Length: 406
Image 1 (cartoon, one colour):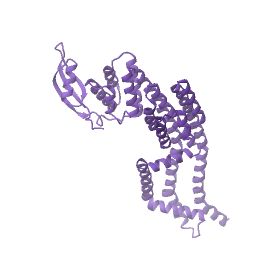
Image 2: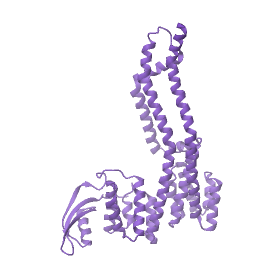
Image 3: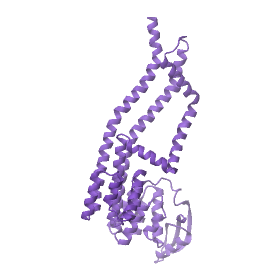
Image 4: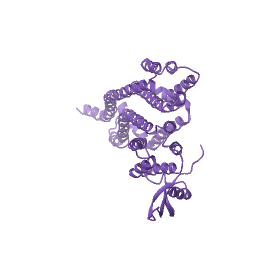
């Protein structure tokens, strides 16, 4: 894709058709385009000056998927109310609290005003609007059902974000507890145990094996804590970067996650829910199946399902039915395959996929609750063993000394 110049904000003053002096702001890719936009609006530009703040990056704030979801719903609602597209962008953009999102929306508005269609304007913002989003908008513009497509997109993104939130909830609790446990253990090793170690050095007796192990470990922490944290942080960062660049490592990690007890079940159901929801949305928009499969693969969130979906796309392109290609992957439960088969035979595949997505989204919700209930006692037991072992190890010499004195 060729580099596209980012739009900038311009402050302008001019005369309207009634000869009244007016002023305002607009976003455009150059001063000439800003003046041309004003002339099309019936305004004679007298003064156009580029503002120092760039369109994106300098406005503060960060554009999140939730921002795009809310924007899609607002735009769909505006169009349903009969508000013209350009005016809808103006209303939504000016009313947004996030400066970066406001600039993004007004930049798209300027592109549309300059003669581009909405799809072309969105494709210039690939970080915020992925291929799936742009393809659906393009299908809506071609079929003259942009309003309906925007509603479907908003619904799709709302459900997708809700699913992501459930997955994050499943992972946040154990991650937070483990991180807190690591902090507590580090504090004990670096600050508490050395105090006990000083006390034990005056005993003049050999320490119990457990106590000696804890003291030796504490000495390593005190002397090398910076190296340990550096190695741990570097390893995590290195693995994350390597995962981005190594497809083999991605496949290994994603397969390992799917095989994990309980958590693997959650991730598998989430991938199936994303697959079904994305394909349902693209079917409802009239996107051909083969073209839709590429976007569906990217939405699954797991490289194992991605590879399987791309293989399905190739098989479908040669005439294989969707149900047959799904069965051949071995990733989809029989119930899902049968629902798709019924949809293919009845011509209501998008409806059936929607039911599958609803079912698995609810399954993910239930599985997350079960996972949290299962992990809570396990984590508490783990913490009890770790902290208890340290406490016992530290007081063991004192107990033994008390027995000798008595």
